[in-house]
Amino acid sequence: MTHRILVVEDEADLADLVAFNLRQSGHQVQIAGLGSTALAEIRRQKPDLMLLDVMLPDISGFEVCRRLRRESETLRLPIIMLTAKGEEVDRIVGFEVGADDYVVKPFSPRELVLRVDAMLRRIGEWKQEPGTQTIHIASMTVDVPAHRVQVEEQDIALTALEFRLLLDLVKRRGRVQSRDALLERVWGYAPGIETRTVDTHVKRLREKLGAASNYIETVRGVGYRVRETVESL
Ligand code: CA
Image (cartoon, rainbow, N blue to C red):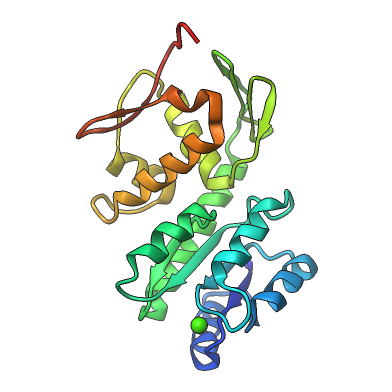
């Protein structure tokens, strides 16, 4: 299936290489070399996924991501950040500003295409999955068909991936889910790749849930669990 992908990368050779490989895989690709161009192009093209380099000549990829996550139209856009090797901080900041995934440079174009296709496939599956229920846990309501979460009747703005992570935990409430299991079901990764990705996302999810943040428990050495019942709140 063809998807529209926006590649935001100022190194022209790399951008062309990535675009070539994505087109080979059947996608429509546009390239933006500046953060500001990317922001404008997104409004115009409405891509299905964005690859976003951190180091851009004008505004950083982090800032681009942060701005997109502030707006409801782009809150759920899948964003994969391209980060420099060894820059652990880039990965963490990337997740904090709302990126869904990251690929470390230098990467093989094939690996990148696989990662992109995996994410698009998962998002496609999520859209088709029949969701009919609304789940209530104390002051939190998870409206599955509408992909909407409310805490104390206030809407919580979640990215597609954050919603999925929460839903995964909520559906299995009362049972501990390992990081590997979450990585596999939510991100589509093989176990053992990058379990800290889960931790960073759970942290951000808790921040967004505010008064309901403690509904997600950390089970030391194992993983995470959403409490089945929440008393005394
Ligand atoms: Ca760059």
